[in-house]
Length: 219
Image 1 (cartoon, rainbow, N blue to C red):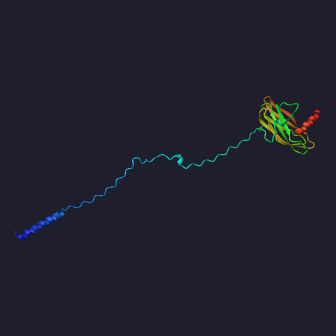
Image 2: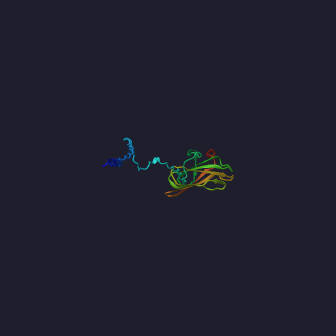
Image 3: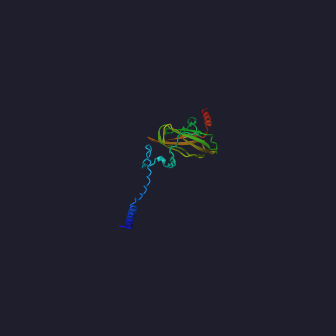
């Protein structure tokens, strides 16, 4: 082999080796991704509370408005007059006892007081107090009409009358010049034996005048 061919063969071999070396050169590996940051564990003493399904406490809600107070029921009027005396009524001890009629069957005491003398055309106030001695029903006290007397009052009616209880009545009486100087009062009450009644006489004069008249009669 000639030297030129030898050199060509050596050059070709070196070129082939160089090409093979270049083809098998190691490729650079891709860079690995940075490690993910590690999760920080929650402290042991701070446990995460689990969601609760319980309803919130009642006091946490908005308070409901309080209902308006209901007005008290109306008080029904009592059909029985109250026997208690008011400040304008006289005491029983200061009232005089009315004169009962000859024929009387009702066990009721009638007391009265006249505020002044019944002069002609001048109204006076008469206080009456009916006091049953026994228990009865339908106690009725009524003034009998008489010529010359004007009486402004309604009859006193008590459905159930208790013993020793004073049932009062106040009335206004105007006497004319020819009118009588006394009142006639009818008192009735139902008892177990039946209806009892009686008439009483009430002088139209004050206590002082009546005492003077009685003292003159005694003389």
